[in-house]
Image (cartoon, rainbow, N blue to C red; front, side, top):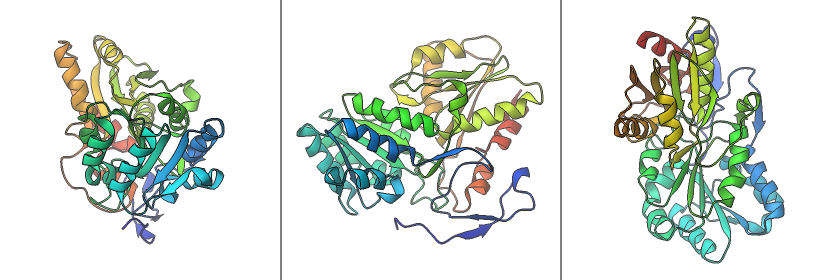
Length: 344
């Protein structure tokens, strides 16, 4: 079940896919658009580089080194790589043991397996003891077309409810590269969503720097404020460019740290008069960034002209090609732009 499906031919929806047949893997596919700049395996390369100067870094996985880009670390630092087999609970228990011995383990698997299958082991063996384990998980939200067994549409809701656990949802290759040393330096357990393989490079042009626990205003706008995390910041920036053609000025506030939330920045930006607030996330509408932001605004008595959510539905999602699914579930840039325009 952990291996990719054979390639399939599916017709993507939307203008970009008109008249084309898309060759894709339903299991693992790049989220990069046609012609978009990418960098290969930013997590694997960043961790391998960090480990050159930090002997306490170890890499661990549950039969998914290749599919979490940890194979790059394993090749360069084989004496500090541990393959635990298809046993996620064992992976988390062993990572806890490593942390107790003074190591900083990076434990990788798929997000569905960490959040669902290994939840109690993370909670009791790692989070309750505030151990220095970094859990890095691929296939977050709708980044695979393999269906509900591998689509982690509820992982943020699960993980942000766990005490002591820092939760990170990076946007692109640069975000991941900078987040790796930052979470390694942080004392305590971290859950980080992972974009793997050929990861788009988007934030380079915005003079962006990742800071754990801080939201960053990527671009300002007078009409709409999109508060986003993960790959949805990438989509928000694309949607902002599309809406600019219709004279709609869109600001994008990137929130790479879901917990602890940068409440001060979110409240300040959402309080600016005249802007509709839209929260965009690659996660279920239940329990993620949208509800976290809505709760903060309500507690602070901040009332924007309108508040909307762009998120995945509270449902088990279909299998298929990612471009088709992103259109269907309204998280593609083109559909986002359409929806925001209709709300104004």
